[in-house]
Each structure stands twice: as C-alpha cells, then as structure tokens.
Amino acid sequence: MVLAYVFWHQPRAEVETDRYERALRLFRARLVTEPVPGLLGCWSVRTPELAWLPGGGYEDWYLVTDFVALGHLNAGAVDAGHAAAHDPIAHAAGFGVGALYAAHHGDPHRRDAERAWFTKPDGTSYEQFHADLVAPSADDRDDRDAERVTWWQRQLVLGPAPEYCRVGPQTATTASGWRDPLVRSVGTLLD
Image 1 (tube, rainbow, N blue to C red):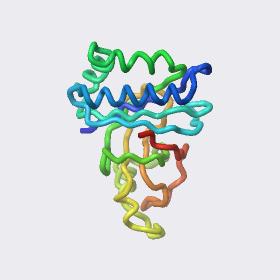
Image 2 (cartoon, helix red, strand yellow):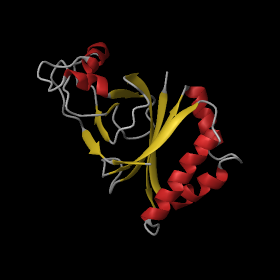
Image 3 (cartoon, rainbow, N blue to C red):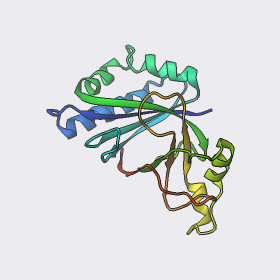
Image 4 (cartoon, rainbow, N blue to C red):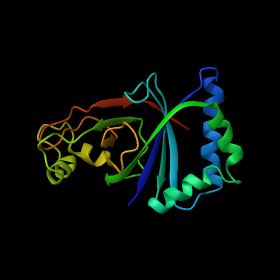
C-alpha cells in the first residue's frame, strides 16, 4: 500500500517567496540524495487558497511504502543527515496542516497540479463509491480520463482535508454521475 503524507503550509509573513521556495527545494533534494528508508518520492505544488489553507501556500506530497516508512520519514526528516536542509524551511514556515492518504486507484507517482477533494455521498456504500471512482460515465469527453487520474483515500483523521483526493484531469465524471468536488485546486508544480 503506497501512502502519501500531504503537508499544506505557508511561509511566515516576513519570509520572501523566493527564499521559501529555495529552502523547500533544497529540503526535497536532500531527501532524494540522502534517502529515507521507504520514501518513494516527493514533490511540492504552489496552491491557491483551500478551505484548510487560508490565503494559499504549498502542498507537499511525500510518498512512502507503508506505515513503517512513514515513521522513518518522520524521524529521518530531522536526523543528522537532513537537519541542515530541514531546519531552514521549518523555521521559515508559519501555518501548516497535514493529512495521510492511501493510493486507491491509478498511478500513485502521478504528479499533477490539478487536484480535487471529495467526500462519499450520504447513502452510498463504500463498495459502490469505490466502484464509481473508476467507472467512467456515458457522458465523459474521453474514456481515457479515468486512466489519467489517481484516487487517494484518507487514512486516519489528522486534519480538516476531505476523505478523497483526485489527482489529474478533472474532466471525467463517475458512473453514478456525481462530479462536483468540495474543493478543486489547480496549482503550479515546483521543480
């Protein structure tokens, strides 16, 4: 099971955007050059305002192999091999909130700045909802849309983010016809 620790954050008011993004890139680069056991990849998205990120900011995705690897990431991000890269971004950050998601369908390594968050409709079973996630509806513009997205389901309730996240093009509907997310966001991937 691939997990994603998703962390939304903002710089403190006095921190310049360029400085903040440079520190964020250096931290992610350090995680790649000095890997933490079980870390599969990481990226960041500059994101507009979300209900749980007033004013917008950044959304970091850290993919890990399992819950044990999540523990390695938690400890490793601040260990001796990573602290010099972690501390500048941590000290520049103001507000932050996180969530933990498990890949449910699609390529968990998909990096896309287009995301939408959903909750399961009342009265719909999880079995039916999960089947609907991957079944394109008759009015889809392109049946391949279902293969160009990744669905994530929240694990544990650690913050205010909704239960499901869809990463990728937001043009496809589901077989049962629902498509309106609670929150839709199109950001900018940071290199």
